[in-house]
Image 1 (cartoon, rainbow, N blue to C red):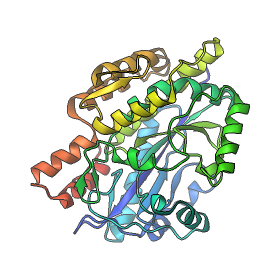
Image 2 (image 1 turned 180 degrees about the vertical axis):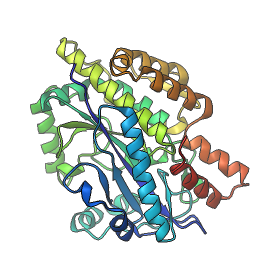
Image 3 (image 1 turned 135 degrees about the vertical axis):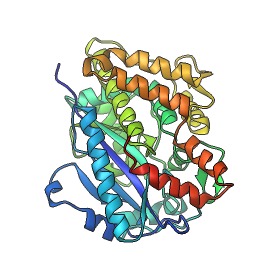
Image 4 (image 1 turned 90 degrees about the vertical axis):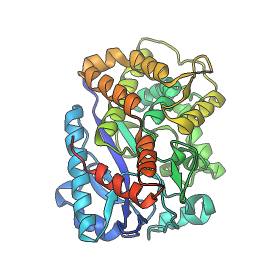
Length: 369
């Protein structure tokens, strides 16, 4: 078996440790953290849509331990650079304290802000995007059609954004709700084949839902630049080990779906309305309440739905030697809670002080287990 590689992109906040507020210093922080050795490859650090954000990109690898080490190294590098500018690096999917974000000085980003108005101006949200290698674009579309029922479960495991503009949103992943405002984001109907996918992308652009192919923000999309399927359904994770869990589950889902396609198994018939409901439920309560079993369109305890996902991809996890790591990590999240639960716990311990929530997140961002 040719082993699929996986790569992880993380978006993070630059924060002032005195008041917890995000600061628009991505340019100098990224320049100071940049490594010429990254030039020309997928790995490294870069700016994002907002000046309060930075992005890191792991090198692709077929070994989750290597991904873990790379993410730790990149977070450490960015945190050191942020520290030289008097800032902290925080793996927070939204800012707990109020913020008026600023667009990065880039013609394309500025056009996005003009075209999509307040939706884009408010869009200071940080995700964890996973790239999984595919054998062809045809295979990638077939995989995207077959992983649809399971993506909300990964969203639930990675929830890390309960606060928005200084208040508790009532959601475990408010990032997911903010992100879903973009007209090109979210789950889709099956594409059927590559021609169907390309046609859908063309229509999204011609209708104005997306400005260009780079703005096709589907839950799972073919990468423009690499031979990968990109899954965009997770918050940036508080803990590197949670990001590795997301990466391991995403690869196992892709491998499982590719085998189903090769064996002629059709995609499950799940309506997009059910997928939207499942995404909402995952964002609402993470793993602390019910999730939607999309194959029955009914709620079920989160632990049961998570265990069904692991069972669904178990042969792929075994083939990659990832089963023990993924199983223990899912049990840890189910037992200890998500990043959202950790943020709320810090809020309670510190008597409602959101600045302490940010400081706690900064400490967790570069913590090494």
